Length: 306
Image 1 (spheres, rainbow, N blue to C red):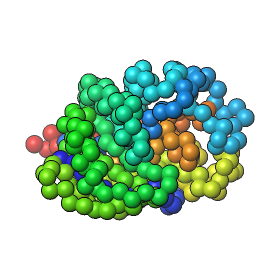
Image 2: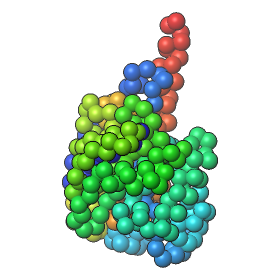
Image 3: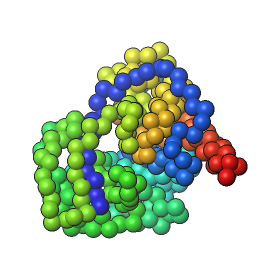
Image 4: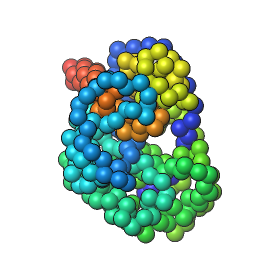
C-alpha cells in the first residue's frame, strides 16, 4: 500500500512551554512510535570533508557546514555514513527530500534506488519514504505520481515500508508551499491510498502522525543566541525539540517526522554541524532513551500485575 499525503513546512508555531512526561504515554508497552527525519541527499558538486571545528566565528546561517568523515557526492560510502549516523541517534527511517525533477533524472533515480537497497540491508530495516518539494510553483497530479512510483517498483522495495495508517506503507509526502496537488484517483493500483493530510510543524493532539521541526530561522539570517530570539523556532539548547517530541509522544502519535536531518537552508538540521555539533541529535537520542525507560517500567508493572 502507498499513502500519499500533503503537509506544509510553513510558519511553525513556537512555544517555550515545558512539557513533563512521567509515564509511558502509549496504550500499551508493545506500542512504539516510528521516528523519522527528512533527509536531503547530496546531489550536485563534490563536497569536501569538513573538520570538526564547532562554533568558531559562525554568525551567519550560510556559514554553517555539516561535519563529515567522508568527501564527495552521494556515493555508497556517503549513504552508509549518513544512515549509520541517523540510526545511532535513534531514527527508524527517513523521508528523502526530493524535487520532482530529481526523481525522474536517470542518474539520480539510480542513486535513490541504491539508497533504498542499502537501507533494506540494515537490521532492522531502515525505512524510507519520500518528501517531494519544489522551489517554484508546480502543479502535480497524485495519480501520475503514484503511477510513476509503481512503474519504477518503489512500492515493492523492502525499505519502502513505513509504519503508517495502521500498517506498513510506502509514505509519500508533498510540501504544498509550492506544489499544488490534483487529488486524482488511481484505480488501477489497489495498493495506493491517497488522502490530503493537513500536516503542521507542531503536534496536534489526536493525530496518529505529525511533523515537527528542530529549528526555523524564518527571515533571519544570523545564528547567534541573540538572533535566534527572532527565529520562528529557535534552536537554542534543544528545549523546543525536546518539548515537541514529548508532546508528540503524549498525543500518542505513532509516526513522528522531524524536519530535518540535514536541511541547512532553514536552520532545522540536527546532524553534526559547525554551529552546535550534535546538540540537537543528542536531544533526540536522550528523549528516545527516556521514552524507552518509561516503556520498560510499564512492561515490568504489567508483568508484576499478572
